[in-house]
Length: 366
Ligand SMILES: [Zn+2]
Image (cartoon, protein in one colour):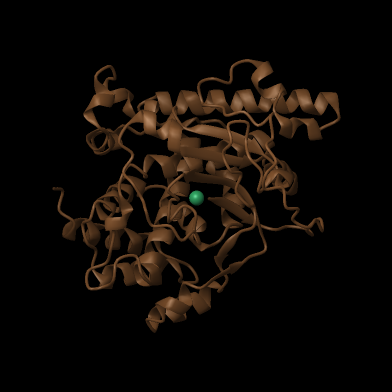
């Protein structure tokens, strides 16, 4: 999930129940197959833009963003995760695929849908449910959250409410993913066993109206840059989703309850952002690099902001997190220490590095 705080006022639109409506022009796209204008032009979200020049420009932005992402994920930039991911995918998927291609193939098999807020509750062309764009998240401010964690009031720290925010993107699989879609109750997480399963069971939704409006609210972020960043963030949830997180837990705590839930959510979102920032930076493209997206990320809530602190530390952190998801248990003390650090007024990346080293120590490789 990716969202940002609201800037400016909400356009007072009530949620209309359109649960049975199928939007025929919400076609799935995948990263490598958006090279022609036609596949974008027909998308229903673009019908809202009457101005022909604006519409043509947006079509170019979509194609350019997809091309950028395709180039990034085709490269070796995520190769440090190849072993972890290829080992978790079923061997049958690899008969024709080089290991070095596994991340590209994985990310290139997920269906991506362009939607807008009016479509929430409806269905896509291929009958997938379009999620709500109402954001349920943690309402407490940094200081309150820090105090609750310090006093071990984890259930209170975990309370979710409807927050003043706009949803930009969402990664889903049909057995709903827990951490990426905070607030969702299903815990029937399943290991993604083959690329085939990815296209059948996983989807990414991008709220194009929200991305467009949000980019207009930041003077130095283009629609294309924000679209690229949000899509990369959602793809990184997929990258980290090859494990069965139902086994995740904290030693001495009930699986996924309270502290574990809080830690898991903050961890997952911060690392999805850290990876997305790293990938943007790897392009060397001025319009995408940290200095620009910094403004955007700093406006997000704590777990997303934390991604910024992990820009030089993401590799170890993602590996540690993936080990936790495969059932390596973290100590309560370290999970709590990490949450306390990131809810400090000014979290210190040196402290995060130290905590990360300690986590690495207690989580064996095998
Ligand atoms: Zn997310």
